[in-house]
Length: 276
Ligand SMILES: NC(=O)c1ccc[n+]([C@@H]2O[C@H](COP(=O)([O-])OP(=O)(O)OC[C@H]3O[C@@H](n4cnc5c(N)ncnc54)[C@H](OP(=O)(O)O)[C@@H]3O)[C@@H](O)[C@H]2O)c1
Image 1 (cartoon, rainbow, N blue to C red):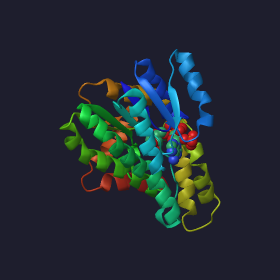
Image 2: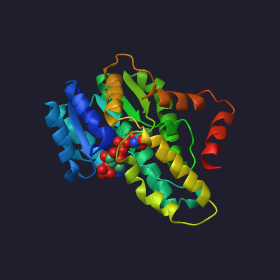
Image 3: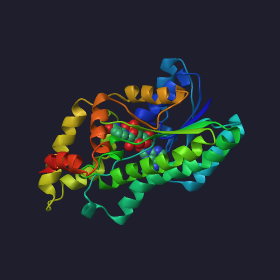
């Protein structure tokens, strides 16, 4: 099968590219800066497989259209789309400018919407396909200082759950994968916004300190990107994939708290203790 993956310069996307190539798929691994491709090529080589790398910034609507057209022209199909690219933005609502809100939604949500919409006609025409989106436990549990990020991940979950039955009727299987803490560049990449919060003295400062400490604890025993990649490869291999997957026992418990929390009190009770 021909698999297109976003955000493959590091972490989950890199590991998933290699894992899908190991499973025999033709992998088109996209990243916004192909100068960063060495790590992926090295991991593929170590695994005895190869992947094809191409440039794609998921915030670039024209590039999304061109990438999908290029893959179909070269390989004749797109069978699997893995929407993996994503980035955190740390801040409570008052601390998030319109620009940062738009950027967070663009990277984590609008890119997923555009890319999925672009592959759908090809998958529909062939009567088969897989769209797997890496969301987060933050797509089920709203978390302090993750207002924009969680909004974007909830948006992906809502969009994909809505799309699921409609796409299924055309042979296209839609799933979301919710990791918890994973040891990748994710936290480092969120560093600028964390730094801004840590260096600002305002009414939220004590809560930011508590949040950052709690997050460091959660990431102290984070799972590996390889473990998440194996879950994603399992979704792709499953003839009848579920709609939603968690990638560890801890992420099952965490997302489960929200998914069974009809009045929202369990989640807000638990997360209040993170910051107060
Ligand atoms: N790590 C966690 O704890 C965790 C938990 C739950 C969910 N997730 C989700 O897992 C996914 C993968 O993250 P990760 O943990 O593997 O983190 P990561 O190592 O930071 O990887 C994120 C990838 O997304 C790429 N990316 C960022 N902005 C992009 C853009 N505009 N266009 C294309 N690619 C872009 C990054 O590229 P650059 O190298 O160019 O920045 C990188 O390749 C994300 O959707 C994230 O939200 C992560």
